[in-house]
Image (cartoon, rainbow, N blue to C red; front, side, top):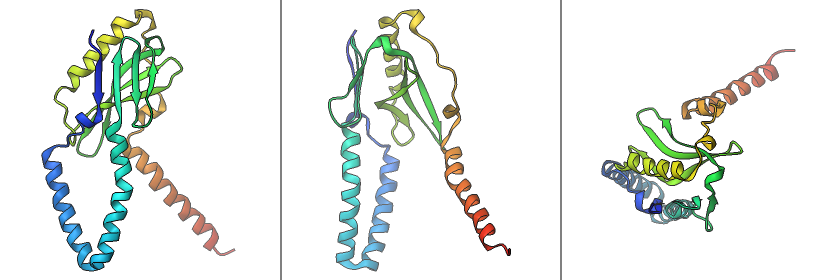
Length: 192
C-alpha cells in the first residue's frame, strides 16, 4: 500500500465565509483600536497580537501524520514526531466534538496502554471543510486492518472523558468556581 501523509499546512484551508467574516471583524476592530489608542498604541497592540499568534500558527501548520508499514507517526509541529507501531494500536475511530451550531471530527487511535492520540492534519469542521475526510479515514483503517491481527483489534470501553463536551467543560470551569466563590463570600460575610 502507498504511505499516507497528512500535513496540516495542506489541510488548514478555512472556509471562505470564515475568512471574509474574520477580515471584516479585523477591519472594524482595527479601526476602533486605532481611533482610541492612536498610531503608537495601535502598533503595540498589533505587534503583541502577532507575537502571541505567530508561534501558534507556525507550530500548528507544521503538524503532520504519516501512516505506513511501520505504523502511524504523528508530529505536533516540534521535532521529528513519534511512531506508534501497528502492534501497539488497538483501535482507530473518529471523535466527534459538538459545538453550539456545528461539529468537528478528528481521527484518533487508541494504544495498548489505554492512551489515545489524535492524528494531526486529519480533521474536518465547518471552518476547515475536508471533502475527502471519510475516504482518508477509511484508507487509514485499511492500513490498520492489513497490518494487525483480528484479535489485536479491541474497541476500548467508553470512559468518563468521552462524555465531556465543550459545553460540560465550560459549565464545570465557569459555573462551579462561581458557586464556590459565592458560598465562600456568604460564609465570610455572614454575621457570626
